[in-house]
Length: 177
Image 1 (tube, rainbow, N blue to C red):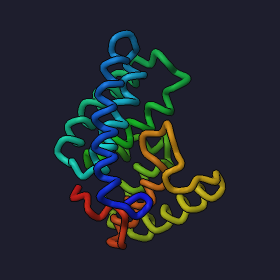
Image 2 (image 1 turned 180 degrees about the horizontal axis):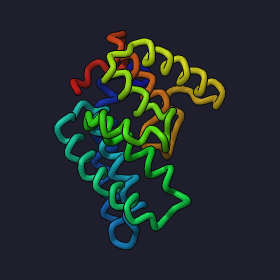
Image 3 (image 1 turned 90 degrees about the vertical axis):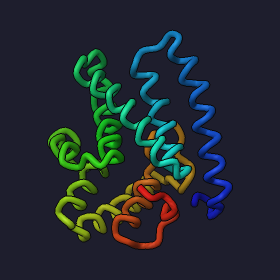
Image 4 (image 1 turned 45 degrees about the vertical axis):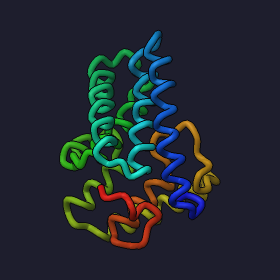
């Protein structure tokens, strides 16, 4: 896993998910759905990375509804693209690939859409090209594995997902998604 310490990473992700519950409850006391959604999404990702697939999917379904509400209400047009990207991520992790692709015009190069196309069309070349793009993007942005903070789905997480989709060794092979 991250830093090649799978067992320690799994325990850390489980603990992070527990801590997200505390933060989510505090935010719910006075914040909008947009603030809450980011933390709920992080919790889902921590659970997924901890291998808690069933629980992660339940939390992804919860946050997906939040994103649908945010996108429908469009109260925060300046944040629409951000919410859309997070919404696409949840659909990907819930294996709603067809629905994810429907939003191709809004975010055509987003990893969730490209991987969804690759999965549905059995296009390993597209997935491989996306892995190369992720490496290039990470290099250009000078992002090393584990350095991103404040994001719900990290660049290097998408890299590992791509490797797994191609059947190559990945640090997330233990996750039976």
